[in-house]
Each structure stands twice: as structure tokens, then as C-alpha cells.
Length: 269
Image (cartoon, rainbow, N blue to C red; front, side):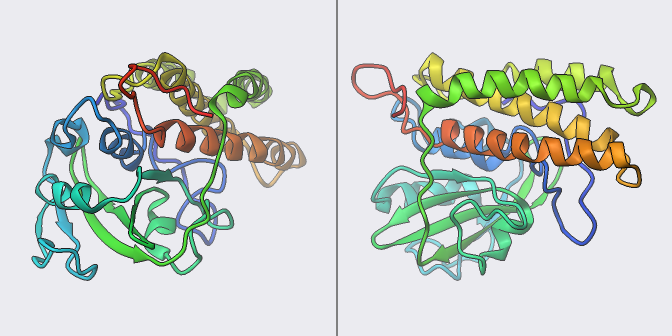
């Protein structure tokens, strides 16, 4: 996994843990974990997200092997893989847009990201509750009794993402120049072109993941440059809101693809 040199952690909106216009971090580690969990071409232990210290607590879920309140996530995931009844799904919720999660799943909403895995008639959410540096995070599992599945066609989303990225660039260009950190954004965009996705993921899906992440980075830069105390700033914030929602949908959908099958390709719906 290639991490941005300066991880994108946008300023929270007043009264909420996460900004309504972005995500907690780019790339979201729970999303990359989802992509590797779903990959039939590589073992989950090879996921770069798990390279660092990742203490995990799944003792409240009741899954066999998860009785310890502290273990490494890399050692806990094979137990989950063995009982999963379908592919994992990446969710990128924010306050007011829970991305199919029930409102009471506050862990994922606060973190802004989760990997949710179907187990029987329920789901298990794996959430990074505390993000450190590099690959380090503290993770926790929570049982979810109901989930509204989200579906975004990769084929349909690609052209929309490209058009919205052009719009986001134009919005960013309209922001006051002193408020824009263009060098930092350029570095972030270069890093997001090199997402460490699992082997076997199709080029179409990988491109959607990269396009969505890039859109979110540009949207966050535009939102951070807006002064909400001015009419122009409020207009800019209103304009980027639907772009951020589209970016989250596109990124979550790409990272939730089940990976390459026996024919070596998976292009989504």
C-alpha cells in the first residue's frame, strides 16, 4: 500500500467527527482491506494494510477464535474468512449519510470507514477506531443485524466520475489562491494513482478506485479552501457536496468488487 506522504485527514465540520464533504483518510484502509479480503488471487495476510501494528478486539461478536480482547487483526481475519457467506463490502459513512449502515453503528460512522462481512443472516463490521501512522491502527468488530446493500455499476460510474472530477477541478480553481495548497494536492494525487490493490483486480475497477479517490482529494481541497463566512464560500461548499457523495459511492463500490474470478477479470455490474 502506498501511503500519502501527508495523509489526507480533512478538517471536521462543526459538531461532527467527520467532514461531510470527504472521508477520514485517503486511501481508506478499511476499503483496501475489503479489496484484499475479497481477492481470490492473494491471501488476506498479504494485504499491505496489515503490515504494521494493528491491535484488534472482536471479543463482543462471539465468533470462534475471537475471545481475546487483544490480538493482531492479521491473525483474526482467517477466522472471519472461513465463516463469511459472501464478499465483504466497503462502507464510507459520514454523519447524515450512513452508506447503508444502521444509525446505531456509531463506530463506523465516527471512523468514516468499515469493512462489513456477511456471516449467516447478519454482518460483522471491522472498523479502524484509532488511526496511527503508516499501517498502524486499532481495530474493533461490531455485529450488524441489518445492512442496506449499496450498488454502483462500475461501467456506469466511470464516465460520471471523470465528468465530476473536471467539475471539481474547476471549483478548486475558483477558490482564493492563497487558500490552496496545490503542491500538497499534487503529491496526494500522484500517490492515489498508485493504490496497492490486490493482484487480479481488473483495470476497469482499479481505475474507478483511483478516479474516485482523486475526486475526493480534489473535493476536500476545494472545501478546505472555502470560507463558510462568505457567500462565495458557502456556494462553493454547496457545490462540492454532491461531488463528495459521488466520490464516496464510486470508491466504496470499486473496493467492494469481488475480484478476479477464474477467467481473470471482474468488471462489476
